[in-house]
Image (cartoon, rainbow over all chains, first blue to last red; front, side, top):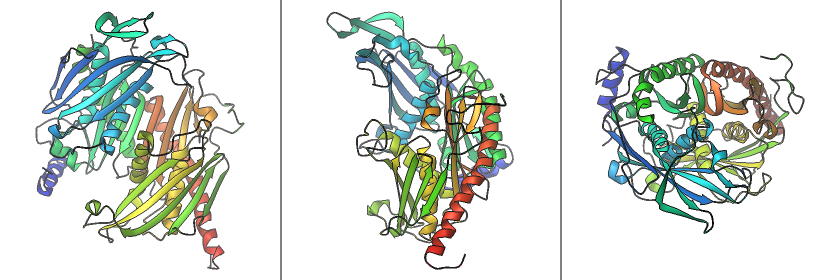
Length: 266
Length: 239
């Protein structure tokens, strides 16, 4: 159900007094719940709940040909589906722009941070490399699917184990997982999306807050203040001062919320 | 930051490639324009406001801005398979968002303003060239606008910020490599309507990139403004 104008106005009124409906601070995420290994067949998988928002993220690996411009590197393919099961707002059919954008934002966060060491995913230069698939499914949309998906992607990657590869037969033995993890670096991109509602900025909106937002900026932030990816979404422009304010809030949000995620990455 | 940074094509760090803009290049369209940064050429055509099809996409409360960005199959070294891709869908959407703050089409309920952008030749910064051409085409079509939009890319090559990256710079590999940071600003309102980032940059450096883009945008705006004025001269109007 669409959020009523009345509720949106009330959200803005509260925010102008520095308050959110659920009493959270601007930089505070809802409770983050992470469950690993939710699907045995996947190389890595995770359920992420942020409040009532829930996504499933699975990692599959396969051996294929490298792209001509990266002959000695593995491939990454990220896709997202906004399932009709997760909200009456989502409809069946081929991916629409929301799902395409979600997949591309998460892909950019993972790829640009160099979190995955793609060179180590090369089996034979120019011929055989591993392809990493990150597949994201929404299970319940109560706002901020973006960051839930971003958190899911990094935890699932960390959780993933390579399947066995039979070099003679040139086949992947999916049912014989090794103990080898996917080669990763310590540049872990934490997806933080700053939302602008009226003149206020906040993170991790509920669906009502998300409906009230005028614009959003998603950043992949690692080590506190390094950004590797960014995307401004929606059609309201920002002053230069507001851009600064958004970056400062992202830095604060990283400090506050990163420890809650980091413990699942060990 | 190093004072004397050598760019591959000899430009200064804040120097934009040669720019060219022309308004009125597609006679059939309600408005059209070309914008060029060096070897990156974008054309844009506007049709509308016209009745929105499919009908279920109509909005009875306002007109709708619909942008389509596409690269011609031969615009890059390795042929692009024709038709929409995930990349082009996303760029279409962010182009729409970049332009929407200045467009005033609430007064045309049930209609659509279609903006078709084609990249004819690509040497990086194609979305920026596309947005610049689209803003001109919208103005040329007489769509009610509060301002113009001007777009530029900032690059970070290793540790050096530069204005308007070309393809060679986009593929920079030394040091920290290349970071690509496209921006769009409302030309006079000085508000940011497009921000993206691919690469690696600190929050502090990013704030510098915003300032650098804001300066560069003024030159883009001058080129756009001149093209619009010239188009009026061409039909015999007064400057």
